[in-house]
Structures are given as C-alpha cells and as structure tokens.
Length: 510
Ligand code: XMP
Image (cartoon, rainbow, N blue to C red):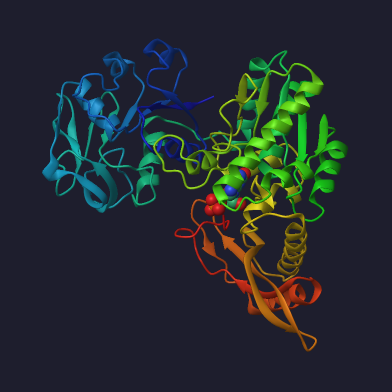
C-alpha cells in the first residue's frame, strides 16, 4: 500500500497535514521524529515524507533533528516551516532568526514554475507563521518562491526531489495549499491515489487484532457514531473479548437508552451490559452549577461505573473510547488552550484503574468516522445521527441538574427534533436541540399567569464542529416548534432561538 510518512517535529497542524493527504486518497501516518530510524523508513517503503513544522529553532542545541542520510534515501521530501528549515540546515544551508522579517498570517507569495507549483498562478496568498527563515540555500538547491519578507519562501533540489516551503500549505488560508500538496503527492512522489478512508478500517482492525490478542477490553458505548464505530471495529478485531458497557446516566434524549440497547444487542450482537446509573449521577450533580465541574463529575463517575462493572466481570486489560481528533484538540491536549473538557478526554480522572486506554479513532475527523461506520454496516440512521455530548443533557440544562428539569428538556427537545425532521428542510442542520435556560419568565396560559422556564432552541450547520454557523431555519418550523413546546409541555413559558455562531459561541451552551 502506498503511504506517506508525516515526520512529526511538534507542529500544531500535523494531524491536518495527514488528513489533507488522506483526502487525496493517499494513506498518511504520523510518526514522531524520535520514533523511526532512516533504516526503518527505507524498509517501510514510503512514497514520500513530509517533515512538519515545530516550535523550535534548528540552530539551537537540542532542537529536534533527523539524520542527514534521510536526504539521501531516495524518497521525495517536503519540509514545511520548521521541516523546511531543517531540510536546508541539514543539507548545508543557513537558517537565522530575523525578527524584522517575521511573518504571521495571510501573505502574498510569488512562485516559479516547478513540479510543486504547477497549475497555479504566479502570485497567490499563503499562510505564514515564522520568525526564523532560511538565509542561505544549500548547494544544489534553487529558490522557487518568495514573499516581500522571505527571500527563500520555497526551495528545492529537483534532482533529489527535496522541497521546502516556509509557509503552511495544509491550512485553508493558503489558497493553493491543496493543489501544492496534491502536486507533491502525484507529480513528485508518483502516488496513484487508490487508498480509501474505508480501507483504514481494515488497518485498524488488523492492528488491534494483533495488539490486543488475548486481552479483555471494556468500551463505553454511548450510541453516538464515534463510540459505535469504535465498538464495531474492536468487535471485529477481538470479538467476545470486547465488553461494551452502556451507562444510562439519566441524561440521554427521550427514548434513547432503550434504542441503543436494542440496536447493539439485537442487530450487532455485541457483548453489551446496560448499567442503570441514573440515581448516582443525579446525586453527584446535586447542587452543582459550574459547567466544568459538571463535566468533570460526569466523566469521573463514568469511569467509576466502568471500574465497578469491570470488577464484577473479572480482569480487564484496557478501556476503549471513541475519542476523535477534534475532541483531542478542544480538550487542550498539546499546545491548544482548554475550551471545554470533553468528558471522554480531559474529564478523565488521573487515577483510572485501567492499565491501558485504547482510542482507535483518535486520528480521525467526524466525516472519516462516518465513512468507516457505513463500511462496517452501521445503519444510515446511526451513521448520520447528530452528535450528542458525553455529559448529555447536563450541559444543556443551565444551572443545577434535576430529574424534573431533565424530563422537561427531553420533551422540548423531542418536539423540536420532530418538527425540524418533518419540515422538509432540504439539508438538515448538523446539530439541533433544545436547551433549558436557568431563567424563568412570566407568561399567560388560559387567562392565568404562568411562570415557567425559558427554553432556547439551537441549530447549527458545520463541517467539522470546530466552527459552526447558526442555521437559518424557516420561521414556520420555529413557529410550530414554539407553539407545541409551550402548549404541550408543562413548566415552559417561553421559547427563544439561538442565533450565535461558533466562534465566538460554542455549539453547546455549557
Ligand atoms: P462545542 O460545544 O464544544 O461542541 O462547540 C462541539 C461538538 O462537540 C460536542 N461536544 C461533546 N462531545 N463529549 C463529547 O463527546 C463532550 O464532552 C462534548 N462537549 C461538546 C457538541 O455536541 C458538538 O457536536
């Protein structure tokens, strides 16, 4: 199988690079620069290598390096930002910090004719983020792009197929970034592009079949697409040795718990245990109003329930989770700031009682997970199900969570979803739900004063949930939902529609 090595020097966008390569139907794997030798690189027969960016300066002692012989192993290389500087430095060029010529953000770039920049105009916009830059090219290299402040914004040694770009082709702000990456893959590395995301399923299955041979694994199944796909993958890898635990924390949508149990036990024949833990979750959430505390408590309680369930079962070796890549970023792993502690990542307590955590989908984005889900036979209804947060309705009830509030919001949410789904709206929002605000407001019902909760309706359209736009639902749909919610559900006096996008708001209210 043809594949690209993404040699990781600690940059922020490494997953994005791998993802952009994969979206060209070429498999890419990320390996830290310390994790592979030049010998292994040769043995694994990569079609090309992408050396990533990173926060260091190549001329400092102890900065991440790779062996000079990498440049001689005959595999085409594309160095990006730090990767480009390292490439030039190893080959005998010079790199300097030039504060006056640092560039951040959108920058005009002028490119020359070469394999990397074919089928793009001479002038375009790229995304820069650097202080250091290559000041002298190594022998055998030529400059193929410059900006107003960076004389060697891209360079190459065509004979050895070594290319370096100071800018970031992997981010969308680089207008011809995708073209540049596909030029590298198809015109420089000679890839054919016959890999499909769904093939990744086979790779994951065979990887875990080997790694988990003879081990017993516990998986927290929520019924969302991520944990469902993780369950089906691991089920194919280790069968009976996978035990799925479905925790009903009492914070699920109306009718959901029974649906999940039915689907996975009956349709897929998974080894499934349902734990009814509603009471203990409500008890722990009693009096708690801070969103992060709620998230942490729920994440922790989940693990405790797993641990206790596991104790009844006997020895278990690992805990599996359906974490996907955006969960990892938004929970502040690596260099990113903590936005929210998604309970399946940041909410994990330190002292979890499992030796190992398995996250088969950790490198994937949602759309990739869905493709794999379809390949594994997950029904469309589940594959295209809107995401539902691990902490459930607790983050859609502002303030303290009580069973009564859960019941109110479950009903309002069911009405809203029903109205949106039957609206005939061409493209459904990617996520739509109701939120119980902590505000009560005065209304009038049947000549009498009513004093009930304000419910907010939220609908967003998005590709990857990292950014999202509020959906312009037709007024008629909103009107029907509002009328039904205030008429049919006791305890609600008013309905409002959330018209905030992400950023600055987030999708969930907490
Ligand atoms: P936010 O609110 O962060 O949501 O803009 C982005 C997407 O993530 C979902 N979400 C979660 N998913 N555990 C999850 O598995 C969580 O703790 C969590 N919090 C938010 C949210 O529903 C949206 O799809």
